[in-house]
Image (tube, rainbow, N blue to C red; front, top):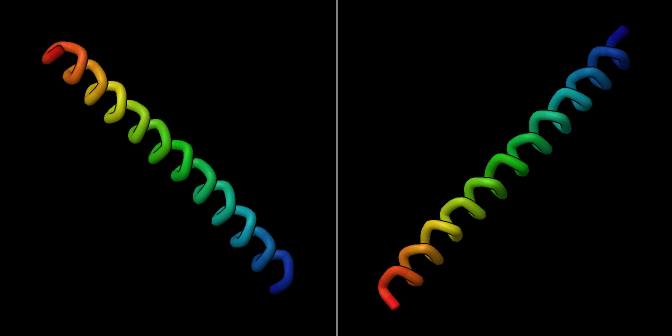
Length: 43
């Protein structure tokens, strides 16, 4: 019983961690895109 609970918690943590990484990566791309657009507007 304890082993199944531990496995479920670890699996949940991995899924949440992976989705957080994708969210941060997407936000980074958005910020980079805005910076590039601003740079293009200035030049």
